[in-house]
Image (cartoon, rainbow, N blue to C red; front, side, top):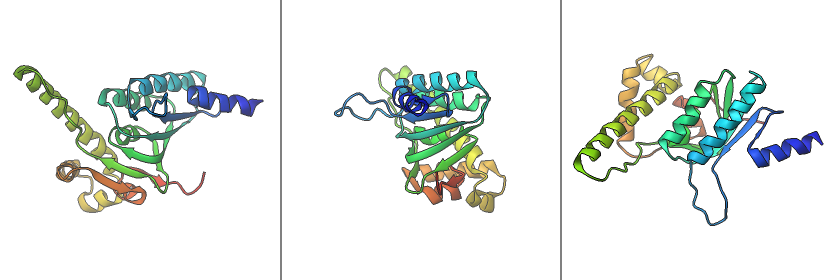
Length: 207
């Protein structure tokens, strides 16, 4: 009966108080729906789940993540919920960690990627439109988002073998490298490369 309760929790709520696991995936309601990626529904459900687990105890939490990118603000809500948690959080990536989900991953204490998953980062797209002043204001805000994104990546990946060997502890040089790389477009890495560059900690070998 206990196993059935756990399975019901996984499917109905995307989490289990008993096993302290959260399943972070895209919202879906029908076969014809487009994949919305990280959005307000995902972030709302996730914040409820992690708070429920935190209230029960401060034992470690494991997050199973399978998600494409999505909205910055909703992704950062998830990022902050993980970063501010008193529980040690491990994220396991399935399929892909791209765009916003690759940023969420950096909030975890341990970042694990499955062998056939990939990692991708890039500059986000712009929704700038409207009158001149509004476009200017949005452009400034989007520049601040890009700077924050580079800060998050550089603080995480400076410990990767590639950057340690190339730049030591020089965060400024890492940031310049990332800016140059992202100006070339989407940067795709396989699971082993994501570890080499420090975006993940290890490739999962077994469950």
